[in-house]
Image (cartoon, rainbow, N blue to C red; front, side, top):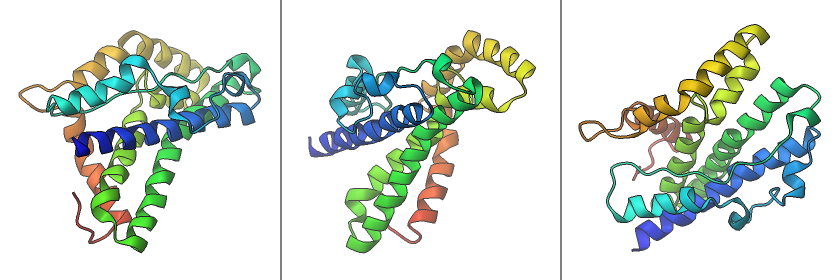
Amino acid sequence: MFAPLFILIAFLLSLSVHEAAHAYVADRLGDPSARLAGRVSLNPLVHLDPIGTLLPLFLLLTGSPIVFGWGKPVPFDPYNLQRPRRDTALISVSGALANLSLAVILAVIARLTNAYALLVPVITLNITWALFNLIPIHPLDGGKVLVGLLPQKIAYQWDEVLNRYGTIILIFLIFPFLGRSLLFTLLGPLVSLITNLLLPGAPLV
């Protein structure tokens, strides 16, 4: 039971860092919605989604080949932003950058303390979370980042396509076919590469 419980705690930490980063950047860019809702916080209780937070524990306990979940979306009002498309992209990418930053910090701690067995799974989780959220489809953060980077006319067209088909594409990528998830099969080598860059020669578990 320790392993699933530890992974759940790591999941809650990663979720809190991710969502708090969204809330903080939105507040800094002029929209106080998330701050007023108490979301500029590392307290996982304010970021919990009843289904998305319990789902990973259920998947772990049932031996699922894939484990994923989500937090409560951070509220923000684009009309409070000076440059809505650009600022929305910045708010969206901040969560993934926060997870990658946490992975770097934990990698330094692992090197200093030799606590690889304890910290490598958490580092891997944060790298996976960051890369997963940067996939350029809705409802993931990467969809908003892509729309913010594209020229305006193309951005609106692509946004419409992502809103219509994004969830269907995501479901197809996540759920295992023939026992394997296409998404995590593709992400796995990249996650391993980044983990090895942070902890070269470390025993990856």
